[in-house]
Image 1 (cartoon, rainbow, N blue to C red):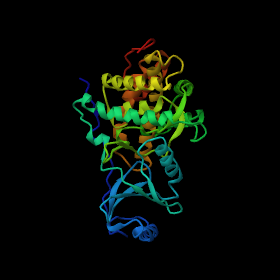
Image 2: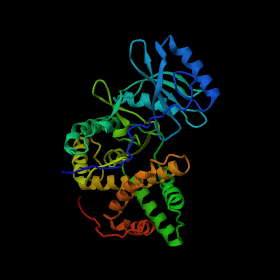
Image 3: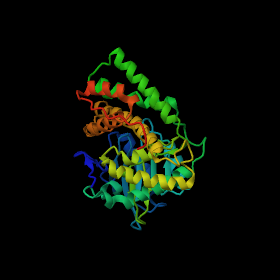
Image 4: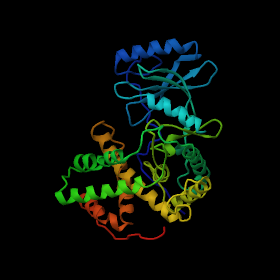
Length: 376
């Protein structure tokens, strides 16, 4: 039976410990002016929203500059407050996409109050436990019902897609994301300067990856659709979080994100099982009516692999940047997972052989050739 490959550093949410007395409720603030602004905003909502200020506490933080606080109401129903400094984070996409995804039938946090100028948002609380926290790591098949819920939510989102609503996941964005790998993972983390031949090989491979991925049909793309961002709600529906970077782009992206997780890896037996079940459901909606995908799962799965490769190269660069620029070292501890994803995919396809050779030169590993040409 397939077993997950887990990082010992795998977080579910990143708790923050108050380091000093707070402006309200035991939550610390690095900026006294922001603490005062928050206290005024909270006081203005306390009566109308039946909030209990003394119950304020840290809920979690993420890889950005946002953090989340939890506060109770007089009725006992908790709320979430997003603290997003406006000079570092823009709340407008979150507010817009929360409504867009809710209209598509997904369970997302409802915006109850929003101070756009200060970057404070009061939200409904979807629950205390993520899908990641409930995963049975030793028995993959025990997780199948949750993954089916996740793919059902994904299909709801994809079938509701319309062009011109979200920013396009275009060639410029795909290429910009790929550049994070040589700029941050290779140059900054590995301390390696690419030679002219290595740079030429990487540029050529990146152009091919972008070309292959842009060939896929476009839908709404969450961009981080994985168990850590799916909440187990009180109604047992999966709530969806961390969607503020959503775009309109390749259909193959979110299923690749779900099954090739940034913090959890399954063996291919389970990955194939879930992906095939998703594909079978997607065929019935017409989403697979493209380039033989509806008749040939292998054609679709190859597209998922090429899309996953773009994501893994990007995330390896992002995790290096989070560690080296932003002082969040736990993320780079998952780098071996991404190098494994990257090498495995490159090893399947002859066109990616030169890229694999460059990565192996940088990583000091040896390549075992196992190219794939036909059906998966």
